[in-house]
Length: 142
Ligand SMILES: Nc1nc2c(ncn2[C@@H]2O[C@H](COP(=O)(O)OP(=O)(O)OP(=O)(O)O)[C@@H](O)[C@H]2O)c(=O)[nH]1
Ligand SMILES: [Mg+2]
Image 1 (tube, protein in one colour):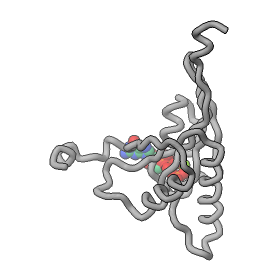
Image 2 (cartoon, rainbow, N blue to C red):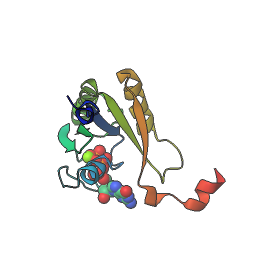
Image 3 (cartoon, rainbow, N blue to C red):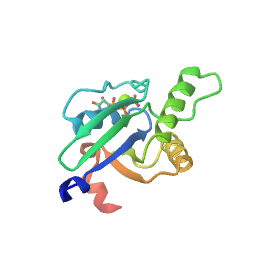
């Protein structure tokens, strides 16, 4: 095997975060194709959707997941959605945790995402999404 092939990497990466944070939009941007449904309404993604990114150095199986939050006992849809996001993490080698740049602090749903990620025990990369919604003046004051 030549050196170039030995350096080739392959892995599975799950995108997780609270509903509406822009997970599906990021998947579409990474793959440069409209593979995931995007809408302004939360709970748009209903199943873990797998898509394959290829370049010269790697093949990455990205999984777009439903948004994480803590569903109430009677919220069957919510429990299904959160369950399928957690299952996607079982199959992943690493996770991207999306939060929104415009948020002034973490919301309860973000903390729920953090809890699920801690249970999954994977390498996690924090992604600050929707960079255009941040107030640059405020960022300097932090
Ligand atoms: N301003 C801004 N809006 C964005 C950005 N990325 C996504 N959005 C908008 O955020 C909304 C939600 O985007 P989605 O990609 O559907 O979010 P999601 O996290 O997949 O949502 P669920 O599947 O419901 O959990 C849509 O109206 C997008 O157009 C961004 O970088 N900046
Ligand atoms: Mg989505």
